[in-house]
Image: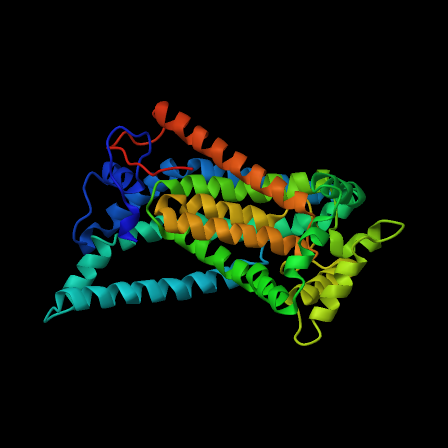
Length: 393
């Protein structure tokens, strides 16, 4: 992870490592047991200073969710994701630390390994600062995602699913008078391709989202604040506010909410046939979501909403977060985003415009977060220590 840290003069970005040195009054060095209290006190001050906007935005979003739920007479469940996410983070952290220790032992081959390993973890690797920096995200991210799921289940109580017919019509108009699913069906209408898209859109997306959150939670790179601001605001503004304003269920549920012929019946018939050799996770998930919707249950991944696609939103955020890593990371992340866009339509989860709106909306939030942080730096609200840079898309 140390490769995250890039120093450069003249750029308005500041690294949290430099901010840490400013507040602690020292550069990273070998850990001393007697300075434990001072180091963590300095870290607490730095966290409140450098992550103030992320923490503030998260608390405001949670307060708005509480107020909305109270107004609807509903219960806001905030413990939906906490245990699973923290367990994943803990296991992955153990793996990363173990690999780091192994790398130190191979590199130095010390006769007495305890001291050099400890010095590396608390010095060059900055484990104490990584853990301290991670505390707000470890607490807030599960709460934000749980609040989103709770709010998603409340959408029908605020606005009926009235946009499906209009979104389907816009989709057809944007694609030359042909529904997007029908446009790509000649290329993708093979059970083998469908199962591959099913895996990429479902399990792969889920694990990549967890890894992305883990990386940004424990990195010391200055861009992490921008990432978390975008992450929280995307779920709040796109996944909740916009989803309520354009309440829609998606192609798979079109016939349940729109009277008249269902233009997606042929697609659902194809998916049903493709699932005969081996089950499609998408169809299983869609059936489970419908069962939870009819029961009014609030649990893991519950709720129905099409516009905009949060799968695509998080895919876009993956592109933005990895852009600074170089051409290969950009190419791979952009390719995966394209796969998500195609999969969302082919698997009947979304209208194509749901994905387009998510890309534009997420990028706009990322851009605004960057401008806001630049303004905060110019106003002297963030450390004036030596600057650091990352190339931003």
